[in-house]
View 1 (cartoon, rainbow, N blue to C red):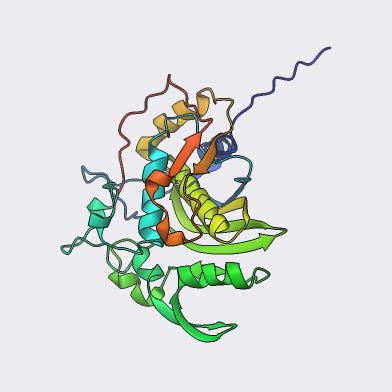
View 2 (tube, rainbow, N blue to C red):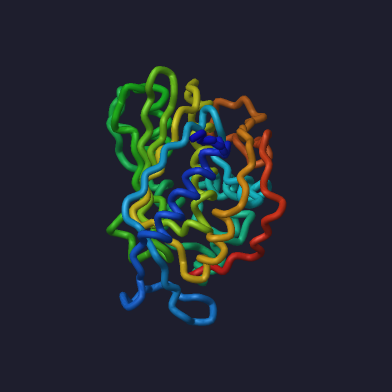
Length: 294
């Protein structure tokens, strides 16, 4: 008997997305009857199926992580805009963000409360080689990446329990750890909860882009992005869309992210400095507007 092995080439992002979604559909826990917080716009409970503890590692130095099962050619720049809003502008004001993805969580002052960028902008007294210095978490990470690359303490955490009550939405992606090995910068992203359809590709693209930026300003090469997710879920109204996506044909491409700004200052990057090349997507898939649970 002769066995024919068919090699299907796909991006790492497609591979992990398909594998994770299949596992959720086949093995996931249902939230029905548990009193979920989330609702659809019509007021109905937004139930979901989920799995616990997902960890995927992307070699972003070789391939920028983009799903090709759907069109991300413009979405990637919106994702980068949001990561700059959080990490560079350290803002909680929705007016500072070009997309409208946070509008539904804004308070009467047009902010998302003491969440995300607000937490990264808070200053603390940090021990440095030059004595105690007051700076925020972003600047402390950048300081260590330039002055103490062997450190295993280059971390951020924005899940501030003291101020959770003042946040319109508790952070989903809440913690990072940065590690330098043999001239390459590696990032571990910890996320408490993830909506696979609406957020999985978005988060991997934006944090991979952040890794590129931090590597460039620190004189390093981008290494790997390890994405750890606590509760990984698919909402009930997303299941038909997900089933269509994971049956679609992946594109045989290896996307690359080009930064057209050679700056060594993290605060000088702009969305227009980024360009994705060697990317394509399945033109036969059109999932339309995704319903969002809030």
